[in-house]
Length: 297
Image 1 (cartoon, helix red, strand yellow):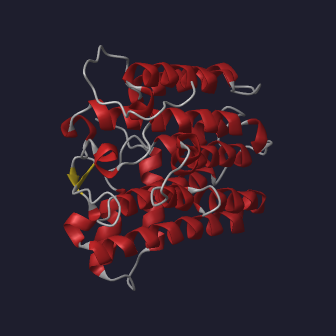
Image 2 (cartoon, rainbow, N blue to C red):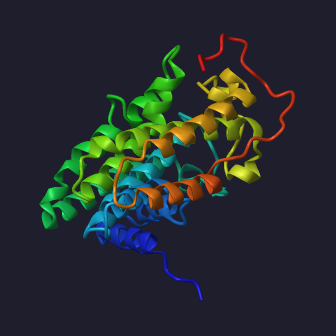
């Protein structure tokens, strides 16, 4: 008998609060399709693990985790749109716009972003000490270095890969660790380097996957960065150097874990999560590398 995942239960419960009788049925279905079933849920699990590293997970911490995942799922819906990646598949099944149409996909992503802040608002009413999470999440989503900026950099004639990666991916990982710290009533700044490194590693792994994996392995189209001429660390560095950077960045994340009662347990959890999520270095041959000057290692 399988045990119910508390995070999935929290997501279902929160989803039921942000949609209801006044939600158009197809919009509700599109939003549900975007969130369930999910992927690894790594961002909310990181937030909860940070909170747990300081003692028993406090009340309403799961609301912060849910808000992070709603925003992440919204970003995937928008990323797949025809005006961006035009991806027909996500998580091994039809993307939201492919199943429900472009207009509902835009609205589903918008609804999830607003829903994330609605979830936070309810949590803060019950636990006012969580108020700082609003600013943290808003910055991670916004146009000044957050998800919106990351998507926007794809429309610039050129950009620095590391700045693009930080906005597109690392900003939300930073929000995850900081919100976990806020839930635990500790200084979020001490955890931010862990989120930065995790986000950088996740994006490098995604770039490698786009270059060397198959659609079946990733559950989405591959080769998109080369097709759309987007920044990609594996294309800029070459696969071998990209794998080396991935390994070094993951080590940096582990080393950055601050002193706390559950420091060793968090590092062990993080190592286990990384082993499941991040690829090991294979022997690769004859893969494309951009001819431009490579990134500085």
